[in-house]
Each structure stands twice: as C-alpha cells, then as structure tokens.
Length: 172
Image (cartoon, rainbow, N blue to C red):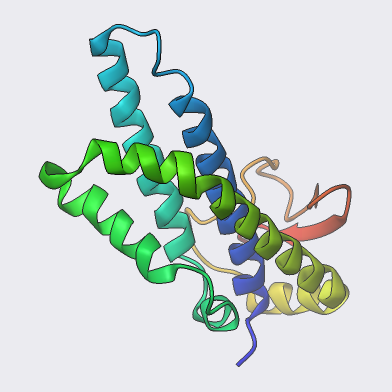
C-alpha cells in the first residue's frame, strides 16, 4: 500500500520535527555540566520532555513508512515515549542521558536518511501530489501542514532538504 499525499507530507514534517527535537536534546545535554544542581535538574527534565517529544513524532509516522524501514528501532522508540509520558515516576535519568549521548547521534543520522527518502518521494510525485492533495481538500480546522504561511494563502512554497522546492497545501 502506498502512502497518500497527505501521509507523505505529514511523514516528512514529522521526521523534520523529530530531527529538530533530537538535536535539541543533544545540545541540552552539553549544558548540564557547570550548572547548579537545581539548574541541572531543570535541564534534565527538559531533556526528558524533548526525548519524549522526539519519540512522539517518530511514533506518528505512517504504517507504510514503518513497514518500509523495519530495521529502525520502532519498539524502542515507542517504549521510551510511553515510559516518559506514562510511567514518569520510574524514569531512570541516567538511562535517558546515556540514550541521548550514545543513541541519539545515530538516531538523527537514521532520521535524516528517512527525511531524504521522504523528500525525494514527494519531489518524484510533485504535480500528482499537489493535484491529489487539492482534490482531497486536506481537512482539519487546526491542522496545518505548514505553520509559516499566510492565513489568506492556500498554497505555500517551502524548501525541503537542501534547496529542493515543493509546494505544500495547507488546510482549505
């Protein structure tokens, strides 16, 4: 089963957000040393939330994307997200730090590969995607595929990986 235009665009944006949050967690980790213990605790909590949000965006990827990338650690990502958001009283802070330090650089690398694949698929489908998305009139009062666009515009041109242009359709 192939992904719908909406799923392709959503997957690209979810991957982009996951990369941004994962890189933020890595940067935050570098700020813990040299801070007072209360500041370090606040940074630790911020890292936990950022890791959970990274995992949330990854979990939102379409089933087709997950099926096409079976070597990706889907279960670990889902388990980490569930632990951070539902079993927070049992969070092992040392384990989260180790995960960000040791696993997140590779996770970002893998996500960037998925992002490039998603961008190429969108570009390959180009005109077909735009026409189909318009025909479907992507619904959702609060759902916007792109946040940085004028309320009066229905179509926004935005750059994907590198300088590859693509036209994304916001909710009509």
